[in-house]
Image (cartoon, rainbow, N blue to C red; front, side, top):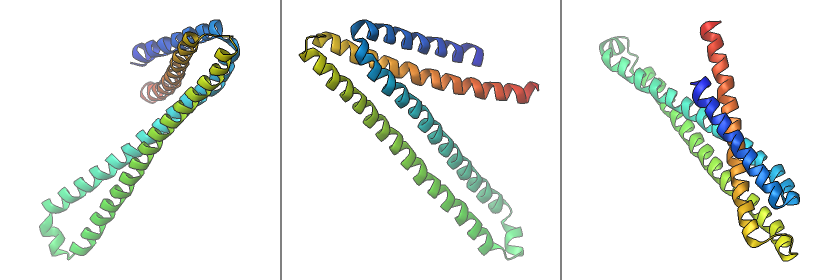
Length: 184
């Protein structure tokens, strides 16, 4: 999968970045500097935040599975638990697992909310900067409103391509580590 899907995604993302950059240079080279400095940072931050969300979600799933397994085992061996008078201890352990799952659930919700909020604020902020600066260029006659609209579209393509490259490079690194463990 690393050699096919991820490589194809990397090539597609690189093409998106190249296409967007070339068209942005053609439309307004000075406005390109603003987009190139802001958009890749947003894309990279999005990949990092998304990775964190996935990590916390996986940890929550693991704790929920532990709690379910714990309860199933104790119920199937209830006679042993009662014989050794460990009911209260088992209930405390199960409560601890449930509280941990609830704590991680709150962390997952907070992480997802932060990710979505960041993405909305960052993309809106970047688009605002492009339109604010581009609007001045339109007013000065250095570009048309159609060119500004095209430039904003290319800015989104640049952002999507950058985040795609970051995601693909992360997946490739994970694939190399996995391959090293399996074949090393």
